[in-house]
Each structure stands twice: as C-alpha cells, then as structure tokens.
Image (cartoon, rainbow, N blue to C red):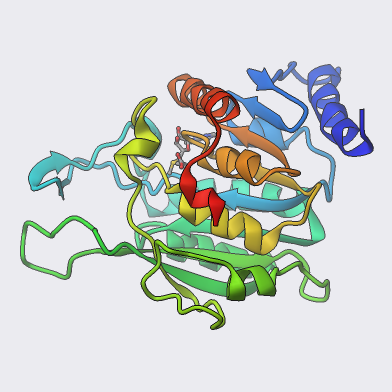
Amino acid sequence: MSPSNLVLEKLVEYISTNEIKQNIKPVFKTDDFALYNVDSLALMNRFSDNYVDMIFADPPYLLSNDGFTCQNGRMVSVNKGNWDKSNGFDNDLVFHEAWIKECRRILKPEGTIWISGTYHSIYQCGYLLQKHKFHLLNDIAWFKPNASPNLSCRFFTASHETILWARKDKKAKHYFNYEAMKNGKFPEDSLKKPDNQMRSVWSIPTTSQSEKEFGKHLTQKPLALLKRIILASTKPEDIIFDPFCGSGTTGIASTIIGNRKFIGCDINKEYTDLTIKRYNAVKQNGFPSLFNY
Ligand SMILES: C[S@@+](CC[C@H](N)C(=O)[O-])C[C@H]1O[C@@H](n2cnc3c(N)ncnc32)[C@H](O)[C@@H]1O
C-alpha cells in the first residue's frame, strides 16, 4: 500500500477506534474513497488538526419553508426535506458557524475551502469565513444559462449561485492550477474564451438528466462544476473532504480525475446509497465525455 493510501487508512482507523467516542465506520470504502452516513460535525470531530487539503461544502440552503418555485414549467414546492428547513436566522447562523469552525481546524494552513450557496445562505457563510480569519480568494458566480423561469414575474429570475473560495491561513501559499484553468477545455462554458484567463463568472448548465440516472437529489451539482473546482485547487495525492456530499458529486469528480483521496459525508442514507451507485458505475462503465477534455 502506498503512503498516501495509508493516510486514508489511518483516518478510518482513528475514527473507528477512538475509545472515548462512539465508533464511526464508513458505509463504503476503497483505497481512495471513504463515505460516511453520519452528521458531519460528529465525523469532523474525529479528524486530527490540519488534515485535509481541500474542502468543498455545499451545505443545506435552509430554504425549505413551504414556498414554491418553477421546475420544467410547473409550480413545485421548494421543500427538499427536513434537512433543509430553516430554524430562524440566529439558529441557522449557529449551525453554519459550528461546521465552518471545524472545517478550519481540520484544514491544512495552505488548504482551501469552497462553499456554495444562494442568497439564502451564502452571506451567513461569507460572514463566518471572515469572522474565523479565513482569507477570501474569490467569489465565483456560477451562472446557469438554462435556469428555470420565475413564475411570479415579481422579481428577477434567479440564475446563479455563489461559490466562495478561501484559504485557511492568510500567510500560507495555496495551490492554484492557473495553466489548467487558462488553457484547459471547457466546452460547456460559452463565456470561457480559449487561451484567456479563467474569470470568476462560470457558465455551466444545471445538472443533466444523464447525471441523475441512479436517482434524484434535488440539489445535485453538475460534474462539470466540481471538475473545475478540483482541477483548480488540488494536486495529485491531495485529500478532499465534502461534509455535505449529497449524491456524491465531489467524490465522483475526484474519482474520475484520479490520484486524489476523497472523504465524503451525508446524514441521509438514501444519498449515501446513491453515491455508492454512482461510484460503482464510474468504475465499471468509465466516465462521462466531459472528462475527456
Ligand atoms: C445542498 S445538498 C448537497 C448536494 C451535493 N453537493 C450534490 O452534488 O449532490 C446538502 C446535503 O447535506 C446533507 N446534510 C444536511 N445536514 C447534514 C449534516 N448535519 N451532516 C451531514 N449531512 C447533512 C443533506 O442530506 C444534503 O444531501
């Protein structure tokens, strides 16, 4: 077993054998992929300090409070599940602060964190990143050219999400694959011009049906988005952690890119089951064509 495989192995062992706390075992594990079906705070609590290289966090947007939105031309409830219910401004802030503080502890000084969200949650997360002395690097506007129309016609049609990118330590040097971002191919993005620097507005369509063949997750991110994030901010052998991994998009993109270690966590079993199906399919059938570029 290579030294980097041992890194992941040791983490799993540490989580499983810490005698003071209840055992937490992965529901799925390979040499480069470990998946947990628990509350992410309980899991992070077992990580040692300065352990992971990159965190992608897509926390609940906390907007499932009985509103309506438009999907494929139909009025549908915004409710995604109990995990997405707001408990009021102050309690939501407490929730976000707890996981962001733990992310800071487990991130290496030169490590970076990405947090994705809409206006319902991203301002609280951005405030907390600043409060806890992260160094903000970018706020990416993920523009969705095919976003659903606004049925009420009383305000603008929401067609982007914000993804914050921050480094743990202001003085440390983070990794950025400038070349891959400038010269890589991004055929899904009508805004990216060949040989031009990658800008902070990314045009990427919402998740296609072909990426949902094993089941639906209502906030599943497109693989093209995670491909870009992982290529931009991680090196071979890096450890990537996703505390709210849902259908596992971060882990699937990381597996397809290869040479990375992924640790993911979701509190809902139906989503960890979905992630396992997606992982097995990629291993058996190969990967989507967007990764050929
Ligand atoms: C916005 S979704 C993430 C979607 C994911 N990026 C994807 O591409 O599928 C947030 C996820 O967080 C999970 N979740 C909510 N609270 C959690 C908690 N305390 N610990 C772990 N997972 C949690 C939910 O089950 C949900 O799948």
